Amino acid sequence: MNPIFWFRRDLRYFANEALIEAIENGATEALFFVCQKQWQQHNCADIQIDLLKRRVAWLGQALCAYGIHLNILEVDDFSAIPKALKHFCDQQNTQLVYANAEYELNERQRDQHCIDVGIQLELFHGDLMAPPKSVRTKSGEMFKVFTPFKKAWLKQYEQSHVFIPSWPKPALNQAPSWHVPDCLHSDGSSQKWPVDDDAIASVAAHFVESKCQDYKSVRDIPSIKGTSGLSPYLALGILSVKQLLAQLQLNYPDILHTTERPEFCWVNELIWREFYRHLIIEFADLCKHHNFNAKYNAVAWRYDKQQFQAWCEGKTGYPLVDAAMRQLNQTGWMHNRLRMVVASFLTKHLLIDWRWGEKYFMQKLIDGDFASNNGGWQWAASTGCDAQPYFRIFNPITQSKKFDPQGDFIRKYVPELESVPIKYLHFPHDYLASTQSTHYVSPIVDHKEARERALAAFKV
Image 1 (tube, rainbow, N blue to C red):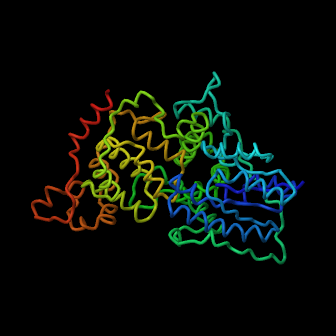
Image 2: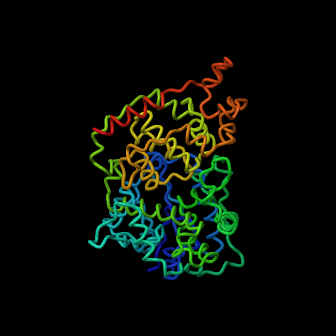
Image 3: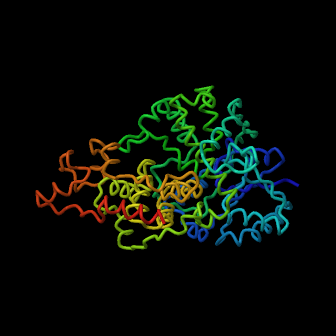
């Protein structure tokens, strides 16, 4: 019986080992489930759903050229998938389905329910370099601190050259056309992000070949394009970690055992991504938004809806925080340094539950990724695994002066401060009062008082 391939968040045909294995075993049918209600339950951003739909539509046509038909099945949520998948398999006279594993709790339960109805589900680990439970302490446990995890991860792979299997099928001379179903209609909100392989490969190659050397020195400056811009493609599996590491090794063959190189700084971020995924595999309660460190269950969070709304809208009175939140709201993306700054501000200055911020990010980010988002928020809130110590509280004014020294980023997103001299820009309220300007909001909290309040709350 010929297998079927099930696309999830692995929306690529190049460097997709599970798909290649399915094809080599005779697969000519693939499928993708549109689960609008499930996406809403998981707080998927509209802009990310738009990017996903555009990519699936592109993928359907691309696969068609190789004689592989992509079927789009529309269901409400994960609970409807086992029955729908079983019906589709019966129609195709097979029960064998190849797919890449997803590690969040709901996704793992969905897969188990599919197995329970008789589907033979063959899962690959295409979203990870290191398979689950392969990076362990000497006692066989999951690491709870990043640096030892990284050292073990590197020891496992530093002598390896990442192998990318070749695409097995020649293109057809006359490829049939593929009709894009109505459920993949795009609202165009993600149009600034290309979805075709040539454009994405060009972006990745340009970063690896021309920008990666400077990543370490410029990655914290939000006014310049110093990051890779690849995170939305990693989040949807349009690119894989293995692809990116293979490309890095072509340019820097010793990259995995020369951690002093500036280019390794980006590899370090990819290993953080792996670390957070291994954590949600090991500790399923993270998928229920529980604190990783249970002792912080005693923190008395404030649930101030008015201050939370001010944070969401970029109206806190702290220019860098406001610029960052407006960037998120306007573009669906936020610079990584600023994600830390605004998360620290929400959880420490406003003492608002990190879960509110985690949810808001997922609802807005084009690169929303549960494992990394949860890990990042718990890091900032000091509740997570290998988190920032609770007594380290980002000063948003100092961060502003350090990472946006000329105010280029602030002026772009907070135009009401455009004429404020740089001397006053990072906290302009005394200057604005002296000029009787009322165009910018007053600070919703005093930094010193907020810091003392956070320290007292966390000491409990």
